Image (cartoon, rainbow over all chains, first blue to last red; front, side, top):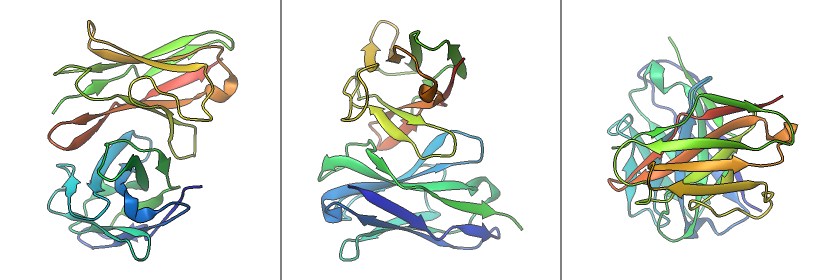
Length: 122
Length: 111
């Protein structure tokens, strides 16, 4: 059974650079693309980034491009999101999500973690 | 990039059927798969329909999906409504410039 557990959230000041982690279990992590999706309080879902199963390709939403970096460590079954130059509008619940297709991304999400809350506030 | 537009809210009585629409602003709705997610209050989203009309295992057959090229929209239909179906529903697709698009979400009230 797919299990995704995010961590690393909290209250951070604008301009700080936290790193989120997502520990994966229950499947062969290195076979699947992975995504980050966020949700501002009381708002809808917003896709953030995707990384290919082998880390060779990464794509970002325009709202985070140049500030966030997605990465993965397949030896440790862990997905990361490095968040730089944080802004108030980055506040939200950050989910990691698995792409269901073996290999490259199919741009869909079949399993989600419980999310980690990032609050950007001075 | 295109937008996916959903009604903000819908409501219906238990046992009835409700349809939630998702209209693509530009480009053909058939160009890329549409997926649907259910998010109950305080929980993470879950897949209810993938690739336009496929139902994941464990999702009851009361849930169905379709696309309509004439209206350039996708639809999620839930029949035999139950109070447990009360949730936010999001459609999602893919922009060929390597970008995921979500609809704004529809709050379903079963009253």
